[in-house]
Picture 1 (spheres, rainbow, N blue to C red):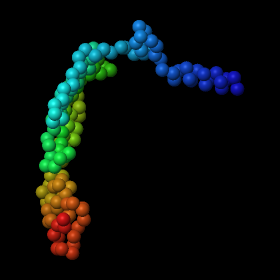
Picture 2 (picture 1 turned 90 degrees about the vertical axis):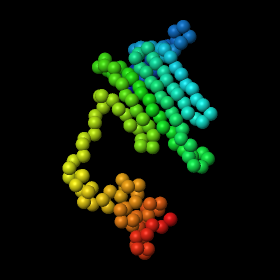
Picture 3 (picture 1 turned 135 degrees about the vertical axis):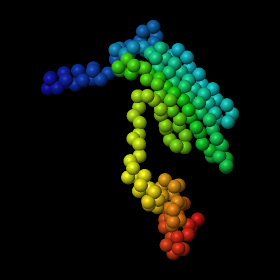
Picture 4 (picture 1 turned 45 degrees about the horizontal axis):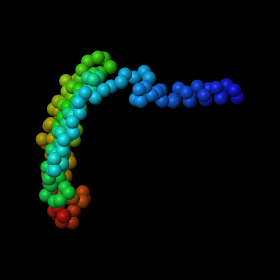
Length: 163
């Protein structure tokens, strides 16, 4: 029983945050203190923004967000472009530039893997059977037998789209 209590106390002590106050600042033991060298955040009335910071450990980040209003109130999209830089565990500095928009998050960096080129068999299949690739054509089948909004076929109307 005493061994169990001792083990629980040791586990609790190891799991406790390893922090203390020094000059009225919380300091973590075993981790270097990181200072913010610069920080900026600007917005305008339309919702566009620019954000950036730099830390003394080599980490940098900057981003610009631009709003494209939609056709109706409270709609639209935002495109974000930016980059970040950090020092990896191996001591090298890594830089990543990115765009994030309707196409998703699209990073670019020398250290990131590149998607393989299209295999010839896939290109041939695409040319011979375009109806198999309806999802890549905004939900519309080549033979117009697919309802883009409801996602259902309409065999009763001879392949007409139902809206």
